[in-house]
Image 1 (tube, rainbow, N blue to C red):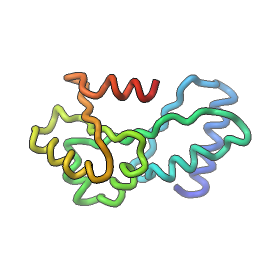
Image 2: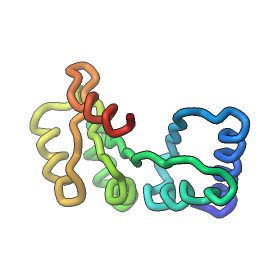
Image 3: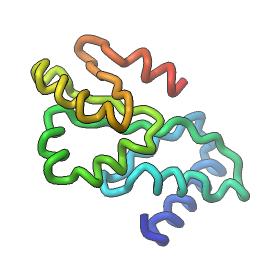
Length: 131
């Protein structure tokens, strides 16, 4: 993450904390920011304000996995390797063989959670981790 982008995010977090003091703040970075960089930025600014950083969750888009793995493998690994939880999302749109393949590929790097809002799979686990 570029220095100016990181400092902008730190400044924004400080302002939000001081002005609104939210109970929770979810940050959804662009796909170009890897988890390690986001963790480093999350640790910045703690000298000026105090906040608790929760888990870093990476969502892997089930239907796009094959493309992402073939075209952007290094970037995808940058998201997955340092995440506290990796969840495969939109699994309702892929078949069991595709889901099994994703699990086989990712199991070398993490233990992915299968997330399905239609069937409720993984939702409770995700909420428990956040809450």
